[in-house]
Amino acid sequence: DTGVSQNPRHKITKRGQNVTFRCDPISEHNRLYWYRQTLGQGPEFLTYFQNEAQLEKSRLLSDRFSAERPKGSFSTLEIQRTEQGDSAMYLCASSPPGLGTEAFFGQGTRLTVV
Amino acid sequence: AQTVTQSQPEMSVQEAETVTLSCTYDTSESDYYLFWYKQPPSRQMILVIRQEAYKQQNATENRFSVNFQKAAKSFSLKISDSQLGDAAMYFCAYRSHRLGGAQKLVFGQGTRLTINP
Image (tube, rainbow over all chains, first blue to last red; front, side):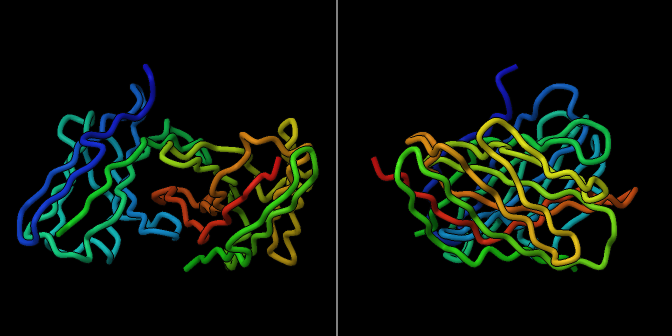
């Protein structure tokens, strides 16, 4: 297992189009997180899965955003009707069970909305 | 809600010297975790060091150490013998110890560290 994998690495899309990103966490990691990072800022929490259940969503996650984690394995993050303000790096992280365990991050998907 | 503040947007240090990155946080919780993450250009974020709030002893990992001041809500990172490979964005992060919580990370704005040869 080589770590958290995110695809695609880069995505350029026109405003109004839908995009979907994929995250493959480290095996045996039951927790999966999505964060958004804009240029020069720290990552901001978007949503959290424990196994297949989506247990928490940030207010940042508007109704244009939807995330899934079928069968508790990989996860997808979809943005509908993209806006220029959605341009950012979308980071996925996973962590094993337990309190205070380390979160391992993927390399992210950089989204540019033109 | 918890907040994390890094007041130094950029820092630079000469190779082999020591540098300290500052971080303050705000929380009403008594038990939590603090982390420093490193994000090299175009590469994924990796954990540098972590500190459990209930531990009084400051964490150390090779050339990296922290100065954890719980009462002051301060958590600085010291890098000794700086190396060119230490150049990166450094993020301070907070995680609640609350059972049943998301265990999500709350990040500061980051400090860009430059190492001068």
